[in-house]
Image (cartoon, rainbow, N blue to C red):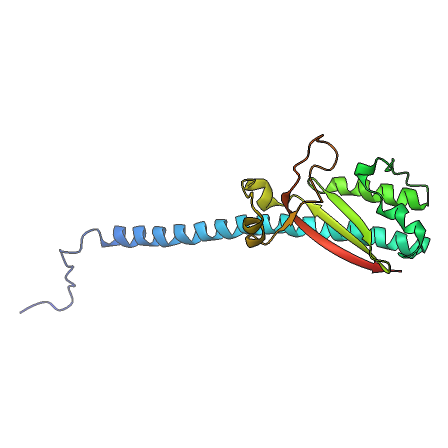
Amino acid sequence: MKNINTPRLPTTQKGVGLIEAMVTMFVLSIGLLGMAFAETWSLRYGQDAYMRTQATFIAYELIDKIRVHNIPADNGGSSLYTQTRASGNVGACVSTVASVDNARNCFYDALDDLPSGNAEITTDGKDYNITIVWLDREAAQNPSVDTQAECEAAGRVWSSTLTWPATDNPSPNPAVCLQAKTWVARI
């Protein structure tokens, strides 16, 4: 008669525990790689969001100063704001001076916080249009985008008037693919 209390171990399943451990490690490593990939993309897009936020702060600061000085866009005095760095009329920013010239100078100084930041301030007779451009992460990593169609397909702006670098290079690229945003201020 057989003893029913003695368990019999199968002799054909040697190493099953090792295979299970290897499969577990494989699944766990795929999960960790996915988390690392997500963190990398998070950091990349966080940098882009930071640059857009900085551009917004810079533009709003100028808009506030335009409103304080109360110079309507249709007034001849609006040309004080629409001078560019390239015109040579932009001087140093003095934090204790409250004038139109100084507001414009501080605006252009603040653009140095953006990578290859530049701006164009125009008027259409009733509004100030402030366009700020900067070299974003995508354009910096892929400078080979050299046609307008490729630039716009990538979701950026092709510009032939706003060049980079702003004044550091004596012969800046006449047409580049940049990140750009425009703010409109009505006084």
